Length: 489
Image (cartoon, rainbow, N blue to C red):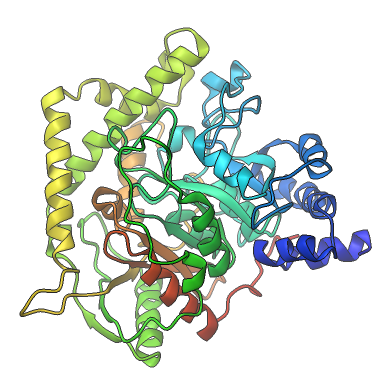
């Protein structure tokens, strides 16, 4: 393969196809890595998605002994929030760690899983400070820009990873999701983004789903088959993992192309939190997906779990969110060897941190009890009883709006208003972080401005297999991989 043709040709291939080239001997690991580096160098100056290039290290690894996993030699990017690798930069989107030029002292379980699968990390991607907001505009590294329209948000908090994949720098990238942070940027960038079930992937060795019940690890990708195969690679539980999702009956990659049967699918297009209106584009995207699912033989009807309309849900989420932030900042204090001050973090972060410090033990336990009750109440909607078949999936918009202009979540005079703006932008996502259920963004719809408008499908706990079957069916019915943004490699 010549250098020019290889870079262009590889940019159109998903990770599965690139891995096949290495296995067949048609390309070497170094070929793939060099081509990906060339794409990053060509496109990243316009998008600011990759903030820590690790090019020389990647080239050395590509020429060394790699794990003989399913993605041997395939380049990938890791989000700079979790998925730490010993010796590499690790700064969580915050100036407090950037100024200290902090590097990770250990490798997380998840990073081991990626590397054991054969991936080669070529860099780390931009993220909002501590992953707090659904846009990637940290003061520390500046905004990532949406390749479909660089004046608009990439979403967050996996916005750097999503912009990199959408622009075809790499075929897939690490992402995580504590309130929509895989699905939101997948929607904004026209990608597949699966939030796995709680306990499906490891957060070890320093975190787990008892202390951090909202967050799960995964990826963003162009193809359903990549998402499924990467989930297979990540899903082995770590020793002593406190929460472990039910084991699948077979590998998730075997669900790609499998017949999902005739499913009962509820559709929700109204904002269950009452935090704002849902745009006509978002409603149109969900209704369009519903019509497509009906044409494929599924039963689609209006309906959703009424527990989503419980006003206490927002308070429960906020208590957990703020408490987890306070815990995270306590760890940063240990990492840099001094206390964090207001000057070390962004104004919104400081305000939420103060709120987290004021969450009492009783309030935290009340939030955990509310989370448990909410999960049981919502789960009943999927449950089949003697007099009700129950539902198989819930369809909704992923977001209430198209990707918004950069700066939409910033409010210098009242930082908390920027955070509240997030509840209007992404009211369909965080509920599944509370319940622990899997949910996937599928890129089926683009509006008149050529902006991607994703739809979300959610399944009962542990049923990623159903999501993968249906997402694969939709991918065949309406392929999206050939749709390229204005800025791409």
